[in-house]
Length: 293
Image 1: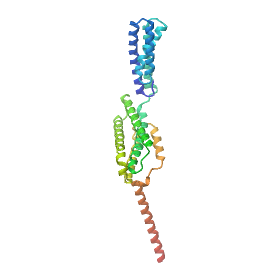
Image 2 (image 1 turned 135 degrees about the horizontal axis):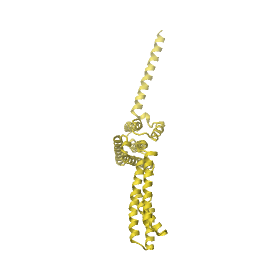
Image 3 (image 1 turned 90 degrees about the vertical axis):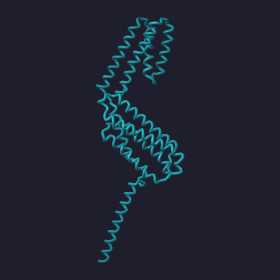
Image 4 (image 1 turned 120 degrees about the vertical axis):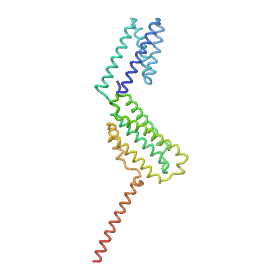
């Protein structure tokens, strides 16, 4: 049994199909081959195949495991192999049914309850990736190590989000909450990552030549809008995870980078200057009236 329903379903299918396929292979071998030495060599080969594919291909590992177990017990206890074969298949079917029912009725874990973490993680990784790439056009290029790290995090977050969405599609339809919005979000995240990667392609030929701090308001506006979209994921009720909210709270506590260079910062400064100027004029007028009296 796996932590989520889709993985349990996949593992049960692989276990059942692998057991039935391996049982057929073992049945054919034991029916046609009677030499214990040949059976022992085949058992060793099946054992090697089991451990080779155990971590990479579970279906192939189970196909190798079943004849390996059948040959092992047949060599230890040369009785009717059909009894061992029947017990193996029946036990596997019972275990798979128990795991499947337990994952649905007792401890279900649906993907829509966890996908918020992947969604917010993808947005945050893309924001960092875009900021590192755009910094080169602002005259503040990031280090090669920082750029590669942010690019890696963006692509890993993209892969995690895509995998989570794929697992959600294999769950029962009643548990596929707002699947259309999820699909649109995944596609948009793919587009954002690809556009950032395209921008990174032009860093070497054009960044040093056309670097200008005038791009900074635009960059900050894009970053702020992406952060707002990330903050609205949970508020729109797309999912119910808490990890994304914690990361957004931590990000909100960080000092805003280059806040004075944004258009909003300049607007606030102008408003403050106007208010200060108006206050000075009022004070000057009051002083003149008092002096004239």
